Image 1 (cartoon, rainbow, N blue to C red):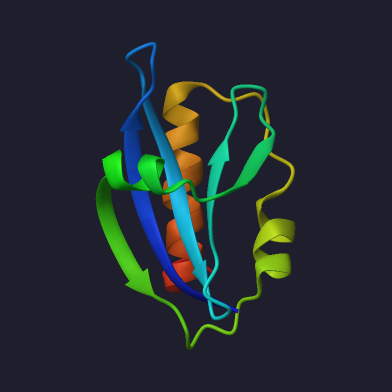
Image 2: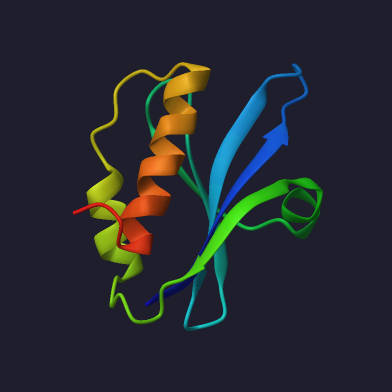
Length: 103
């Protein structure tokens, strides 16, 4: 189950801001979720250096939501080719979905 989510931003080597979610599970694992420029959803294990250098914009404890990682993955598929602003909107919408603010 997803127990905590954080909306984060980091500066890419090109200087562009990259937004991603940091998802923590009840098993104690963490993953980053973001939207690649191709529109594919990226799921990677959280590299400690990346997460430590990113700016956390907001967090939410969602242990009561009952959302599994599989359900989250399924709900985030189907994105289109992504600009920097659509990557930001993707991360914001995913955060709100987990926080229970979006149906």
